[in-house]
Image (tube, rainbow, N blue to C red; front, side, top):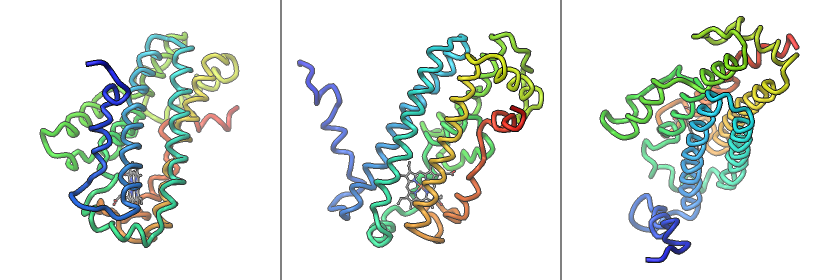
Length: 252
Ligand code: HEM
């Protein structure tokens, strides 16, 4: 069979997937399903690029690390901007189908947890959300046990001649001293560090926009995932993945 646009992209399958249950959806539910699916596709691509970024850093490849960071950051802008689309769903139209989600929530997104783990945010593993033996459980556990992007960055610094400690706890005054030196004397490496700050700020921006969207849509109601909702989400704000890069600002 010749390859066509539709066969290459498996469009028949893809476009049949916006059906969370049999029967007719509420009008705004189509948008709700599509936007979550789009997020999950972007999460897949972000993980793919984060893997590549770690490999490039470990190979001390500055140009390709910078290019990959630029790509991830551009995707992140899209992820944040998509919240505008979600905010066109009013509280009442969301309520028309909220019950149908039962306990379903972005809380359970395995790929989101994977991204957090790659970024080194391993504080709340909560594997029990994913059934033992399931593919998601395996993926999430694998990521949890793997080195982080920060480990790859420290490796990159070592390859550039900086005496970084092998296993630096975060935050680390030793790493911070090295970073200050880099910012003052090595613009090539410093630009990679700055893109890490962009990445960190970008994820925090997504969290901020998500919680504001949650507040305007469900107010103080509990989340479908079983948390306190906005109250829980507010606690996840302003928690950088790379604290050392923020700590040094006052020294520059
Ligand atoms: C009307 C739209 C949405 C509402 C009302 C909403 C609400 C919530 C609430 C209340 C939580 C807290 C956990 C819980 O459920 O108890 C949560 C968590 C989460 N949501 Fe949403 N959400 C919406 C859309 C989205 C979208 C489109 C995504 C993209 C994938 C998303 C991703 C997440 C993630 C990753 C978490 C976990 C955050 C964490 O644990 O740090 N949400 N959401």
